[in-house]
Length: 249
Image 1 (tube, rainbow, N blue to C red):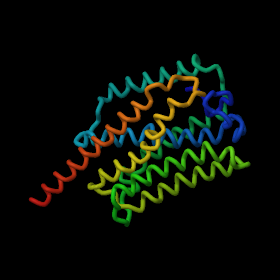
Image 2: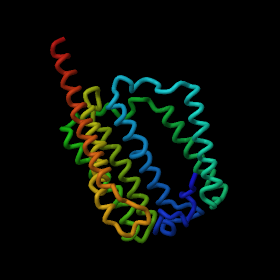
Image 3: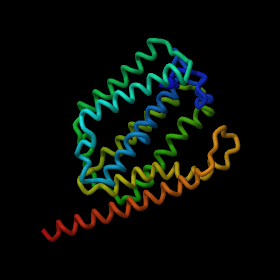
Image 4: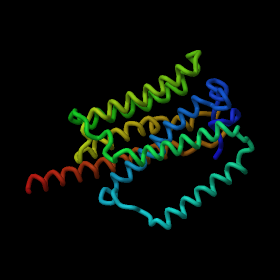
């Protein structure tokens, strides 16, 4: 919608508007944003909702008619933003390639089995292990895409580090057996990633170079931390009740 994959003047880009730009595409920014939104904007929110409402995680939350309506609404919002919010018009072929990749991701998600990557050979370690892994993974993500462009001369190397992080983390997760009793471990993994943002939240209020108003970010971080703690308590209690019922049976 905002065409930041292609627009070199998009305000959030910084050095990535020139470093890694080739054939009309901001390659490092495109790779970074794809990974970021796949993990932090889609996967983690869906996971948290499923943990909060486990009895509904296999049900459709809206009817087919409502889904069609929301899809039409989303399409309208994207078209409005494309033509009204930003004046930049990308070249046809790069934009077509981006749309093609989006449909390929959708096709892959449709074809892959729902339990893909969940049945590894290793037993799950303690949840704290995955909490640390999630935190370090998020820290590594930001180091790669926001620090390495200032330290390395080649955009290709930065992108390779990004791919190495993704596939290395995927390999790490697929080693474990994520069975029915893995709710606490999955929550710990997601919480570790979010704790990185929570720890930065109060610092946003001290950043005098920001053009927006970050007042209240510390409270947002605190509320998020409390929410994760409560969800952890609820998930752990539910797991204990389930184990007690199984032992009785």
